[in-house]
Length: 178
Image (cartoon, rainbow, N blue to C red; front, side):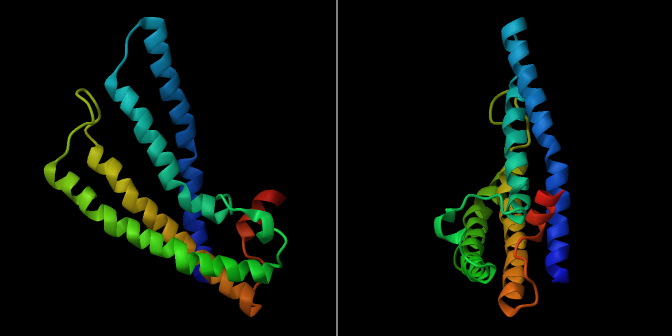
């Protein structure tokens, strides 16, 4: 469980840092709108910055969302199950879907990202941000963050199944109690 706690702490730290990107996203988008409609001007790099910040926000917060059990799930049956039954389902979900998906995502996007870096790929548009390879590399980072948080969930599910712990998502309880 110490490993799961460490992984959770990393996801929490990243999530709490990344949440400030939501404020930046609103401010940059607001500036784009004001410049366009109040001053009849715009900057391509600012419009692209909205895309970059939006991508960073959601792709870097994926582990944190999984930590808090804030991902999309159909709780029609799951919500009524015991904590042990939920642990079995979450363990199966991690092993059969989430971790294979993360592996597949890294495998499928590795070439896409590496070619972008090798080419020195420039901005999406003339006058845009010259950071496209870094934007594309967020795909790999996202897969890694999701995989690490999935390992934490698998450890916690095994702890619930074996009786070493009674709680599958302690971070969710800490947020709801706080």
